[in-house]
Length: 371
Ligand SMILES: Cc1ncc(COP(=O)(O)O)c(C=O)c1O
Image (spheres, rainbow, N blue to C red):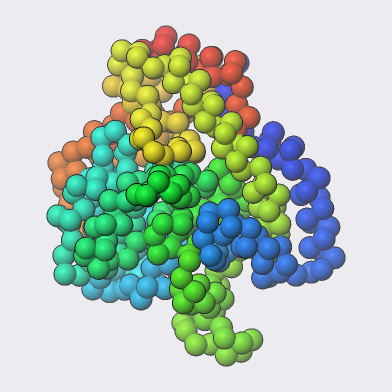
């Protein structure tokens, strides 16, 4: 049996009619840029997240970058970022001219270790970017408290967490992207909500930030040839927004299917010697963008799984402080022990909404054999 890491074909089969209809309608209207489907999708996505506004942009990286620009973050500023994430979280900070400052992660959730944030704050710190890694919300109640105490802004990197939910103090459940000043999402095709190409969106409930984001993503425009800001060409295509509208209707169903797949993996793999299954914190709904386990001798285990035609990936093999691109920041091996340990042991198993129980059984058997 072959089990791919992710298989989007079944997903696309489910929305085939919508894809055809969207292409036909947009061709007819020719509103390819900032068109009707984009306006509708922005409202629908904001409502889905529980935010007042959303602004479609060209990628998740662009969403993070424009959110930072919107807060006037730039040279001389510092932004706190977890050390264990996709590099785009830090790259967006670097693009502004500000400095990313890395913080180690929690050994259980792999999200930023909130007990270490305040030790990294200096007089230059302007913001924190918590990442809801793998689909599990970071400890937002604590992060928001730290931000308030230190007068910092919070941009949620929700690129892996469309639809994830966390219980906030007072008992209210909130979606990823609705808790910070802004939330940044990616619509890279294999995300829980993915476009048929690149795309992203920024959520916010602050009207001032919303208005500035609308300008920043569209050449800083106030009217066709009037420009108030040094803006960018960073818009989400109407066509992608049309596809995303169709997929958004199925997102809760697909997230539930991911959760069921994760529970089934947990049942088969839980308690196995030498293997750590994902930890889901109390009071969160993890949406399993990635189902990541930890094993020693990871490379040998992966080789055995690949022999059996099982698609596995490593998210992520090199922590940010050890990336050659960030040599100039002066970090060294040993600076973030948890992140270093996890990056040496982590393995992502096949995970997508339409994965079948027999495929999960096959992966689990192969893993047991490899161990
Ligand atoms: C945590 C995280 N941040 C940022 C990004 C960047 O998103 P994009 O690939 O759409 O630019 C990604 C996506 O891969 C991601 O996983």
